[in-house]
Image (cartoon, each protein chain N blue to C red):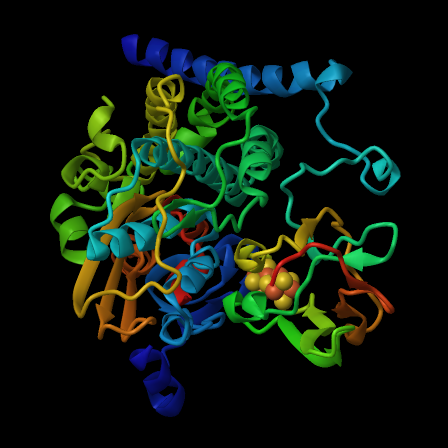
Length: 160
Length: 377
Ligand code: SF4
Ligand code: SF4
């Protein structure tokens, strides 16, 4: 008799645990303010990344198309996988001296692991991490970018 | 594996009721590109043979050509669910070799980050375990609770999984001003949500019946195979590196090393749930007492380790993670070896699955908590 009683108790107890689980899911089903899913491409406008979010390496330019990069190449050295290539050129300054400046700051987004080491290495804070998070392109070559804009020059007062 | 090949080539040895099933490499319940060759008799598993290496990326070899600060970011990509502990292990190893003392603030922040990572990892493991056993609900509930932690990481470290937040000598940035508030909010939130996990899965009669007494690992076997982490502790093997060889801020906090004696699938499950409670306790003890100070000490531009061999172990979410650096005094290591917990935990699987049904093989594998890049690296 006792065995039978225990058996029935176990079966009912088992059902009870199942109902408890269903209770939890049921609670969330009928309380829409607890929904956590977002409809992603639709909420693009509102989606804000955190300020430290590492999306890609960018080089900010001011309104006169000037940047802070001196072409020193430290970021190229710091990068663990060769995502950055610095091509520099030499020019003659007004007082007749030769000077090396940046020609092209080439950045391969496709190879970059977003490790932030280049940004840390840069002595003049010329490059920072951008917030863009959608990087899909139709052609792999579009992932190679030149960070300094055409015709841009170095800002006044950046020491080398 | 040898047996498997032999049978293929000597066809007279094939017995009609033995057959081999390939689980993986592309199978959702192997949690990555892992192939398991299971020898079955009917539905009963006789033995299994794990075949690894599908996503081997040569990280150890790659490290030999990188400088010390550069190679840290590769360890994110091994056990991506305990990325922070892996980073920390390399940094601690370098700091010990150079005999650099990091500020107290760094120790506290590193420990808090470790425990947050552990909670996040166990949450994802809980999602996947439930799903492996056919409970789709758990997947969404676990991911829902993991989201606040990833937000904390994203705000402070700038990334959600591959943080690269530790640098030799400290941290890459200071914590974000919102950090403490967010962590406290999360603890308050998760203390309410964790009992739901018990209601949904641990208390569920079907789950209990399926897991109790299944895949029993004895303490002797656990030690012999080097099974560490919650999987080893479920068998009563006290192997918590945080207790045995305390590092960072672990000496300052009070917490229990949870142990069980049964060593079955259910207890491997249960211990991870209990570890989440312990992790929350550790974070609560530290979060209000983060000392003021620098977030990194100034290191030389080029870091060169003295000649010699250095080893550092930490407790990752899956067990003991070790870094062994052999240095010849140059700016990159001569040889670097990682002791990853997943590798040892995988190879005990053959001992556990003899005589179980094939559906239970998946349940046992789930509670070993395998992360495949950690095994292949
Ligand atoms: S973020 Fe890292 S991988 Fe990317 S360019 Fe900078 S240093 Fe190289
Ligand atoms: S981005 Fe910075 S580190 Fe790189 S070349 Fe320019 S100034 Fe030097």
